[in-house]
Length: 535
Image 1 (cartoon, rainbow, N blue to C red):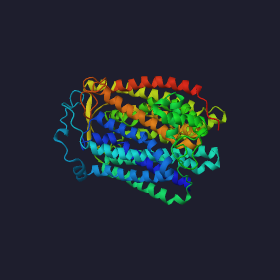
Image 2 (image 1 turned 60 degrees about the vertical axis):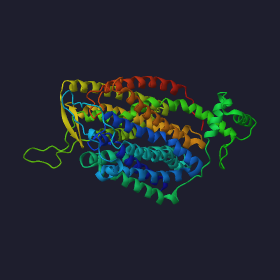
Image 3 (image 1 turned 60 degrees about the horizontal axis):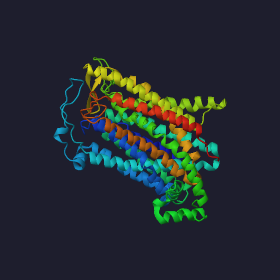
Image 4 (image 1 turned 45 degrees about the vertical axis):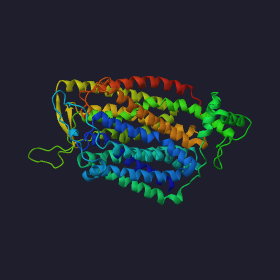
């Protein structure tokens, strides 16, 4: 019952998360807000980064004050309240009360000549403070749940042995994918073809149901009290090991001498059951061994998060077919419904996950050829490299058509985008490859973080894993901002509007491919030298 409740909460939470983020670029570039393509992509990257970057905050709250159970319950409540802001902004009266009147210069005067570009200076971002504040609050709730729900769920089955823990992670990933399928298949269709108001009310309902299930299952949960934070102990040990105890003054030197004499470090026993000084030292050694692996993930996450930002923006400028075709003699009321580009993400969860879980892994395991978690992550990074290369090549072909004025205005949601004749199906290879990349990095990465972390630091290490993901997303956002500067940007993107036909996004893709190539080599070297913790 407890494990089933955790899996249900995860599925509903992920359904809400993907419902919010999948069409965020389309929502912000529509006529409702009139944001530019790169501006909307940066907002999406900011949200994705913050939803991971803030994970240590949730881990710290759980360690020091609330425990995993209390932190998850409070985070679900915050998540629910913050998510209510999106349907409010989808209403005209709500936008007027929160953001004021849409500025006149936001109404774009676009010409479909010269590749479908817009003239003039980019307008001020309408409703930006409200949107960014809401996204930040949602990200805080998401990140706290990510940092605590995974170890909390694993604790429910831990007494049943290592196989039960491994099966839990498989089921946990399945529940994540069930939520993703629901949001990508249904919610994104509603947002793109019916209304964003209805599309953003669905994640609110999912979060309300998740909170209700979590509270009703409270009597069945195995809970642990907070044991205190080890952050101060780890910092002091880091300073001591690098010979920098002088940075902390007399107090730091005294703490180091007290630790060498066998006395407890300050705050190392903030709560009953906290680790001993010897355990603190052992935990620090484990952290020093895991940290290079985590840091090597940063460039990979920069590539991965392009799936829901620049990949999506690229798809808006490719020909998107109508889902329901009908002849002139038999018109259909569904004829105007267009194919949501985010449906290409379904290939990962519908095809790749079952194939790996039921065919590839058992086949390799029977022959004792199943690679370690680190080797699987290395393979996943190579898949990410090929994906971003495929996106860059496709973008070059798309730009050639756009520069020859082979574009037509395409209505997607409430926005018009100058699309070339190339069909959106050409994006399938890059989406399949980035899906394979996620498959071989996310699941082994979670397993690696949980199994390598000491008992008293599982929450902290899981939080670090998600924190690194957020760093990669925010660095991707910063790089995109730098390269898209109107005068000196390498992408040479003079307009800040929804069209990217005058931008060299292919340069951005190829730069990321170069960074990912170096990352693959570094991670291969690390995976060969890494020594696993003895259990």
